Amino acid sequence: MQVALARRTVTPFGLWVFGAAASAPMVVLAGGIVATYATTRVSALPLVFVVVAGVVALLAVGYTALARQVGHAAAYYGILAHGLGRGWGVAAGLVALIAYNAIQTSLFGLFGATLAAQLGGAWWVWAGIAVAVVAVVGVRAIVLSTRVLAAVLAVSLLIVAAFTLAGLGQPANGGLSWEGFDASGLAVSGIGGAVAFCVAAFMGVDAPGSFMEEAIDRRSVGRATIAAVLVLGGVYAAAAWAMGVATGPEAAADAAADPAGGLPFSVLEGIGGAWVPLAQVVLVFAIVTSMLAFHSVIARYVFAMAREGVLPASLARTGTATRVSAPRGGSLTQTGVAAVVVGGFALAGANPVAVMFTWLSTLGAMGLLCLLLAASVAAMMAPASVRGQKVGLWEWRLAPGLATAGGTVVLALMVGNVGSLLGAPPESLEPFLLPAILAATALAGGAWAAHMRRSRPEVYAGIGRGTPSTHAVPDAISVSI
Image 1 (cartoon, one colour):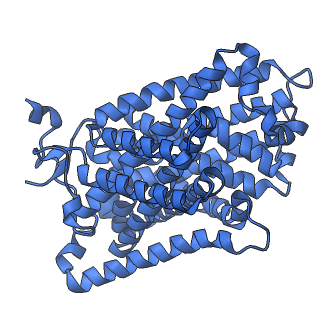
Image 2 (image 1 turned 30 degrees about the vertical axis):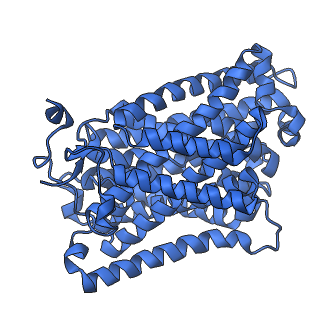
């Protein structure tokens, strides 16, 4: 009998919730959109969100098509192992662990700084409390996490909708301006940085792919992922447009850069003072639920890779004595990593937002974009035995081909403008440390796979192929009975 996750416990709606909650709409509104206006001074930010959402949606087509066929909890690891080769799979698994851990851990810096500004105290104390909370919830059954994420996401979307209506209802120039959707606004110097910021806003929407083993319906993973991208793309574009209308497109950058301006909360004040404290509280909860979503994905990667012997087998532990439960070993490992990283930044005296959040989140977003690109290539190159009998031209050829072309341009813009994302001087070489880390991790994964091929051929042969048979593992409801 094989150790496994709890089958048929995540509904199609639950999959969508994980993807949308990981992206954290409240964090994008209060942090991402404001910072993008202030840093890049691109007035056509709403249009940038629309374009980037289209590219990410195309990238998700090949990714989810392969994820559905492979059905692996460590999605990128399994996808590339089947589509490009086992060595590529191990490289992708390690890059995914670096990327997801970087994004998840970066949020502790943002959380600590937010509460320290509101309530006082050291940021790392609040971050430590968040580490403990995520650790406790992370080892529980996935149903609990889904309920928490759904509740916070619903209120977050309500607040973002209220902000959008408030901004559009209070135009600075006396009427609605459509400058935010003017294509000529894309031909400006800051466009590369704006694209990079927008890409980072969507990272996390690929989370449903890691719940394939627990999904009630595998076919719903593709719909949930792409729906999350399109819904969030519309939400973010509308919110960015409303911010530009409320401040005036020509003044949006200056208003966003002014700490005294109080965006986006100053706009919410126009529809009632109660919205501001509600938004501030929900922002804190949204950061925590985003952490929890990424934590859940990381735990599944560690569990699935350990189950196959690529990582230490002791990490493939579940939460109870039964064979089907939450990935306790992976969850505790991720908590340990987060605690060490938070402690390291605290001891170094680093700024929790300008250094910890900005650098780590950028590293994570860059890594996940590379993985989405690799998944599109894998979809086009996957053998017929992986694709299945029904081969759709759109999901296996056209969409991945378009996604590879568009994603390559977006990645080039992101890497080329990483210095502006990090606030580094133009002549500094520090920003190129991030792509170097990802490249070194991928090479290390390939080298580890080659070592296993020589010394542990039985483990190498099972890379990406350790998901239990559907008939070998009972549904969770059967276990409870």
